[in-house]
Image (cartoon, helix red, strand yellow):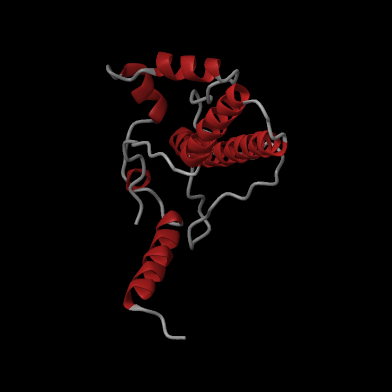
Length: 172
């Protein structure tokens, strides 16, 4: 079956995005001061808030004090490389960029797991209420109201949410 123009354009955009991910960020290619120097000396950089957010997650914030390249804790994670074999993410800035990417991916995965759990619990409760046909009118009204409320919650769980981030990468 032939692809539509829209499908061809989508696939081309996907290929371009994948290639862009394998290129160095433009800031990595220009002479610059270190990311740590920026964090230490520029006003308006709120590393205290970052620390508070990680504390709320019961996690340590990323160590941005040195300029070593990212490493996988288990060794199972393969980092992207450019066509010439250079690491796409390097130094403290690369570790920070990678952290953003992986936190977003982890948040998406965790949100999906939580949503699936809640949907299953709601569906089980609705099935339970429907299976236990309640003969008394006052109890039936309460059960029907709960089913309606649960069904509305289920509809809400089928939606997606959006969050806006400032752009942190300039690749490609």
